[in-house]
Length: 369
Image (cartoon, rainbow, N blue to C red; front, side, top):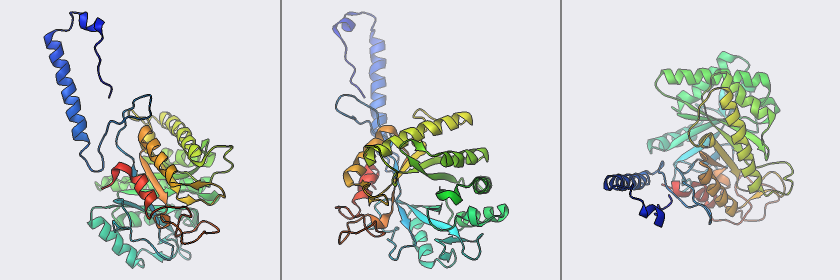
């Protein structure tokens, strides 16, 4: 907030009465008290911060941070343990179609919900500690439920089974690859998710739905736009669009950070336009609070495109300045330095110099517990 300055001309005017001045002082006091109180909440505090050297900007609540956890790797981090996950949120991936029963939801295509004993225990422990567990459906590998399960009613039942089993308040739909982005598959997915969301709402348990999509520096690709469009047309109340800020094509001279900031800016314009078409109103900050970004720590799958700690720190600052709603990383198990120099991206380390969980700490920022 800028300081109010009275010029000599203003002081010479007689229109400022004692009553008006008193009202002005009272208003300033109320605003100051309001800002101070807003800073006390652990996860939803609001702060006024200076951004840059030459201008001021009011920065609102920090983005919420939830790292993805890959449940298919040999060593899964104990996501419910604060020493392994500094955030009080986590996104577990991925729910896929069963290999022999395509309408049966499985963790990574490896185990049914009943067979996932350790995962189920950890989820229960996290929720008992008032931590938020999100579940992600889809991903880049395996068979998406909406691809494998062609029966709309059974597909709805598969999604419902996961949501009910873990009493989820938020889910993530990671839609990647030609099969998952197929128009018929997308329509089936959207209709099933809309039905599940309606059922949860009727039961007094609202379900937030995030859509995770690949992007280029120019924003959402046509298939991603179509996937979001299908969700909106089916009546899904989309909580947000999370962009995968890595594995781009040629950057044309941009840095990975610059390309990601460009992707988010262009995506915001696209989503705003689509919301306007569907008469979906947004707040003062537009759609930015309904956008998210997920990075891949360190070495990404694209040679030469590397997220460093300094980039994560800069992305957090960008997120705060633009009121971005969410930040994530792929994945929690990679948030540590490698013991040697990996020849390719690893599931268990980032491939860059870092302290354990340093990416998480920088993306978590002032939302730390």
